[in-house]
Image (tube, rainbow, N blue to C red; front, side, top):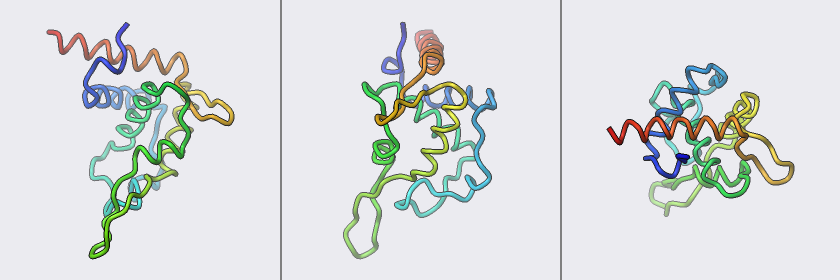
Length: 143
């Protein structure tokens, strides 16, 4: 069985994003085109399908985690350095609204499940999706 650890992350995320976009179970909300991905960013993302890329990235991160992940942990993972001009830079967390909305959409699609008080982890169908995409990528790489 091929897992997400055995293939390059960029290829896995790109292929997963394509699959999520085709499935039409994940849709960016109307405000997504104006939203920044964190307070440390100066501008919103320039890619048109960044919502699907972030959803695929979240699926990958959740699949690699040993225990359920909560929104706070994921905000830290997607955080970055806020530049304060003359003052020293400091770490800031990523956008919780974006992460929460994508997690809710992934849960409605049946790819993740919520464990009360602990966070979210992949459902069997979500694990199957990630493993199948990883298997396809491994076949492409080996040729």
